[in-house]
Image 1 (cartoon, rainbow, N blue to C red):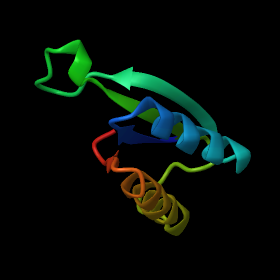
Image 2 (tube, rainbow, N blue to C red; image 1 turned 180 degrees about the horizontal axis):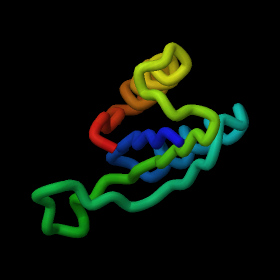
Image 3 (cartoon, rainbow, N blue to C red; image 1 turned 135 degrees about the vertical axis):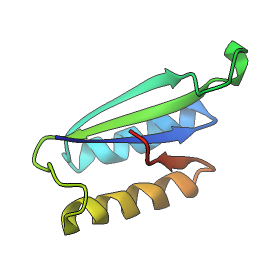
Length: 86
């Protein structure tokens, strides 16, 4: 299983992206409040969209790279980013 994390400053953006990914039935999707490294203030926490794809297990495969590119684009369109360290 491969896991992706898209991070957004705004909850509305995270929920909209999660809904879009859910429509495509890619895998498990959930929205969480994400405390990033070095952040102590709860107001500074970002919103994360975790996506687990059970059908992929090789991050270097063409389908996995395509999903990474798609998720990165989706995040950038809403002032977010794809966290590659998940």
